[in-house]
Image (cartoon, rainbow, N blue to C red; front, side, top):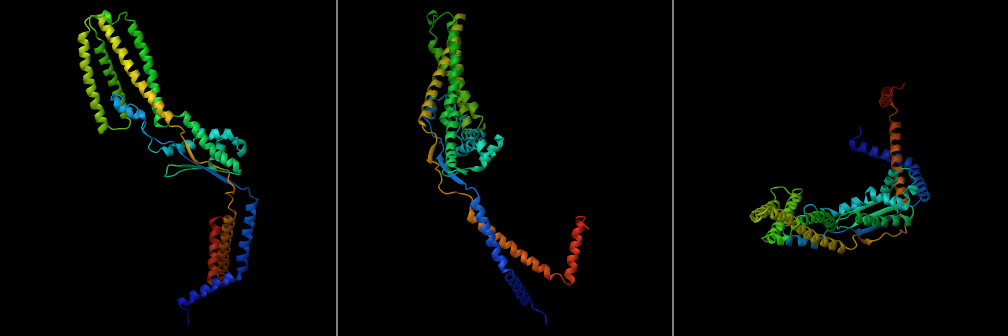
Length: 387
């Protein structure tokens, strides 16, 4: 009478249970020994400590300089296009924290070359990177976590990340107010130089308005102011080309405003041409118009520069620390119990598999199975050129 499939399965399960019982002492004592050995090694290892600092990076906000741009009309959006707000400011500050410039400052500040015992600065940067974790959360906070064998050193390096970031931001124009301040400062210096040149050229004519039979100052001032408005609008549209397409409504509106300003300037130029009846008057009027043009630009840029400086000073502390890093009281590594349990579990599983394989091999050493094992060994030896 042959065994049914259910009976065969029952015998197979009993065989497995028999194998486990026969090797029960090994399957229990070996994992316990590995657990004790791993736990002992964990106590011998140098403990590691983790310290973290959480802070709020600078936030983009509407500035008084930006609100005044619209009232000036011709200068509206002058710096807005080139100095647009950053879409992901938090990610930018995370990138600053991971920059080589900031890491080099930390390396020099804490003499990490000696502490990490690395001969090359690139190796020290890599070692520091492996001990630092920087994470930005959805609530806008940035967390810097540092691992070190010294609790005090871990806290100091974590807090130093924020301090060095503060210094780095002081050298960079990151916020809207800082960018606008730098932009208008550059424009103001350039306009000031051109204004001085225009004033020298005007004085070089050797005449003043009393020499002229007419009094062209009012008309010339209107032309100069209109020319300054056209120049400012041209700068605005040129900056908008960098982030808007020509079919965008804002760009079309800016081009229409530029066209209207140019038409008004053309009419004023025609009126001024009719007024220039003598070569002397023509030379004086052209010089006076250039002077008033540069003077108008200088006044506009001065106002915007002062507003940008005011916005920058109102920002106060750029970085707001929520939770400063403190020296941890408990070590964060090694995880002795976790590692010991994992090692014991893996050892037990490997031994159990080994027992089953050993039992299967014993059962196969008879009859047809033995011939199959012999064929497998011969094939394996030929595959690797063994005899």
